[in-house]
Image (tube, rainbow, N blue to C red; front, top):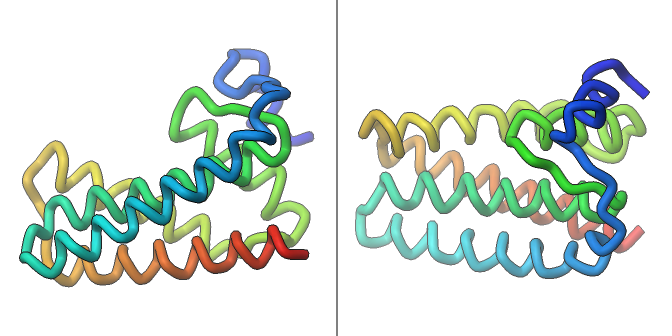
Length: 142
């Protein structure tokens, strides 16, 4: 167990949550809904909302992975730490997925808090969200 993961557990930013395995499917459903909403927002040129919704699609996709392992996160940081430890370290997800999730978080924060967003950013985030969701569904099928 790496030190960041251990610290998240000690600080209760990650907690053991036995019921989480039953909730993983619900998170995938939420990710799919957010992805559809982001595409709809893009079509009507609501790039801010498309960006935010695409990020949350990725967030719920990531959360489904953590739930599968019996944990629940209490922060976006803890979610990233858990993904690195539980999936990247075992080769089940790629570094690119984590980088895309971090980029998505930054774009979402810029859109939400600083009114900085673009069509290009929204489109790239939607593509990243689609790719992430697809890869997680493939993990589930293994």
